[in-house]
Length: 126
Image 1 (cartoon, rainbow, N blue to C red):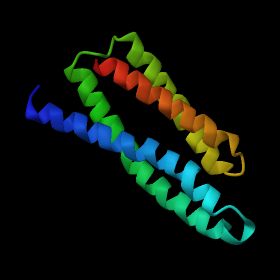
Image 2: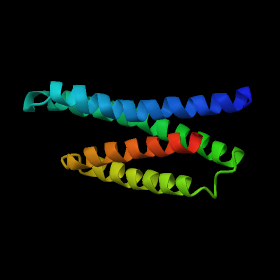
Image 3: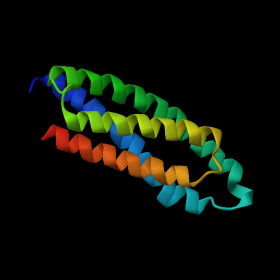
């Protein structure tokens, strides 16, 4: 594998780690620590800041993922199709959650979908 494609894969993995790791950190640490009416503004600020970083991560994931799928000739791979369908579903859930943040079940669905996407990505890479 060339250094260029190693760098593309590395960027893809860093963006994935930010997106999924950030969700885990929010769910396991931030939300429990800031639970309560008096800390709701701080929680909202943290969520917005993470959301901005998430948009950058998603852009990197799309660009690097499309580049790798083309380079490695994966566009006809059934596993990639399932992964892309889950990406689309998680995208819809994220937008829905942005519009209705009080629907906390969406957070769990987004996280589970993200973990499934990572699993499929690992499957494709091997």
